Length: 434
Image (cartoon, rainbow, N blue to C red; front, side, top):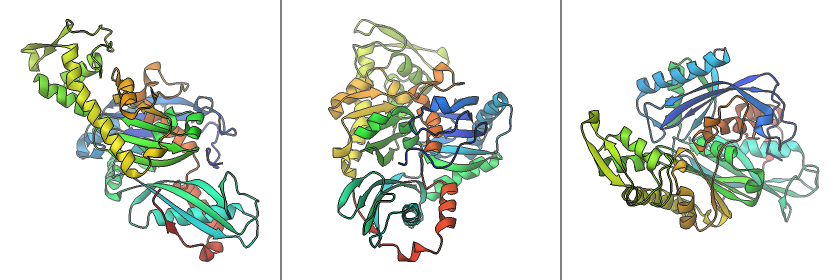
């Protein structure tokens, strides 16, 4: 019922998205080529990308803005790249964020129907009240969506519209963030003469890009391992029910390599990408067969020295850090109360998921099948961008198609329609722990 937004996408209109990651900034300009009449229509049938810009991030640490001047230069560069290719100047854009101590809030509300039929206005009004409630503690509401309905004593109601009953209950899920880090992002954009029309949780965007409809319906957990953060999004019974972010990511592995080998961080990153593996017996991106006798050079600062290490020794450095990241994810899931709802499958995405052997290693830790998730093909995107590293960037377009009352347009429209009517007679809120 809420898989696609009720807003119509105008054919020929364009939208700009900006992904502010710790490792890279990405700006994409997309043009809608078809309205989403079918909620199962793939993104590639609805959109083509007409402008692309991406480069190494600057001024960010663990998803948080720490150097305004450096970040401004990087944002200006990636937006200018996309603008030049698209042939237009950008003013408004949609931004993916992982800052602000992202938290999930699950709660429920009920509305008395007095034996009448459920109307869309009932659903709209409880969602409006839910948005106000989720942001009542001063945090910004990034997403708000229904988890499920119950009508009288019947649970699992898929679509309550026009059904008759006495009491309609609605469970809601909100993703909120601290306001100050988001204001800093807004300040950054303002200095670039840009404005964020919407900010979205990176975890949810990545999940929308890589999880298919059957995985969402059956239940799955998507883990996005970025450079400075690791984000997770959990789906159960077709709904997005939990989100979280950890201030730790693939950069931890690079730092460990640099420290262990006494080499520059940039060289450590290169070694990780080309030769790194969670298992010593596998083949890395460079194509070299791994084994005790295979060695490679480590170049020091200014090419002043060299070192050698076997693939097995390198894996021994990498493996504990991978285990540390995944164990922290497991602990977060279990502490949230959603460990039992994490689904029969997990999906790894993000740049960190491209480490050789990490899928098999994660499968051992979580004791369930794990696959590496990549975003769907979209016209205008080069093949090299259809990789897990760009999942959150491409997922931003999917996020715009999701029915989400955190969207200011939907929220203001619903409030105008229902202001002052049934509002005062709403049922009491009941905050719950899922």
